Length: 153
Image 1 (cartoon, rainbow, N blue to C red):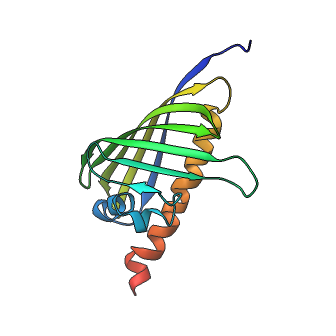
Image 2: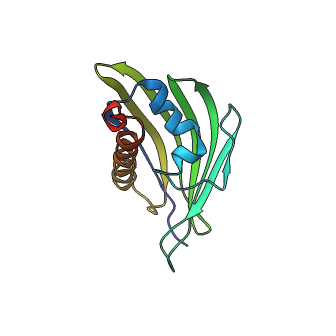
């Protein structure tokens, strides 16, 4: 019998984007915009109580399943969602995430806070934080392409 355990952790990542909060928020709220920097959703119901889910992974590799429920949405200010992450048929984590969009000089300060329960060593807080940083960098690249005043000139 294998030993079961849970690692609890919270991490916070901050990013500054040159786009205003409404445009950064829209990159999370619009499924077409979000698919440019996040795994394309199989289901996307962006409302309180709504669900977002996606499945994917490397070719011939394991399948990761992201299954989220929106708990609170304050347009242009905050999104709170809870989600599970599975690796094939194994639940690897359960998290609550808050994404804040704050007006800042020249754009938006995004504050991403994740509180997670990482299960049985299948995932780690450090790996999740690393992947989230990559994801938020991709978001920044898309905002630069799509929304930056410089890209319209």
